Amino acid sequence: MVGLRLCLLALVIWGVHRASLWMLEALELHVRFDVSGDRSSVPLALLALAVGIYVVVLALPFVPAAECGMLVLVLFGAQAVPLVYLGTVAGLLLAFGIGRLVPAPRVAWLLRRIWLERAAVFVEQTASLSPQDRIDRIVATQGKVSGAWLLRNRYVALMLAINLPGSFLIGGGGGIAMAAGMSRLFAPLPFVLAVCVAVVPVPLLFFLFAG
Image (cartoon, rainbow, N blue to C red):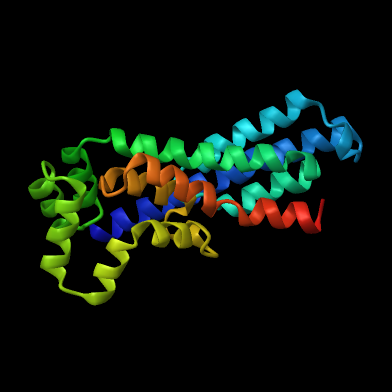
């Protein structure tokens, strides 16, 4: 039974990954036919469509967000940098918002589906606590210095996780943001500020060196 669930989970992750890449590859072919290699003449509507697809794809868990963003930048050039930046922020906020809307009982149910019984029990027991009280409870329960540091510096850890190479293996930007929302440990405004800073490197480097 456990093996079957693992196989189903892996199949879902693979399906989401392939679907996201298929959407962007289809868009790439469309751009090649429409603009004949002149990226400076890309219609604004087509660029907006690409960024819109990117926002939706980015909000999905287990999608290689950085790779998708780079593909859009390569397709449309430096003119797409501001929209890709804003789209990245929007996609992560969308995932975070969806996570915040998931009620605690449903979070516990999801945790049990992936065999995290202790985490599910913890969610049920601390659902009525404030984020700081929940963090204090985790630190007191675990007692690990590294875990306590990560919790107290969770926004820094979030920024690092979003930019971690191969982060789609642990959920991707969308999965990380959605998990942050479901955890109720991240306040909305600090989360927005952290995301705005975290997503700067890729668009900035592209603008400076490939624009």
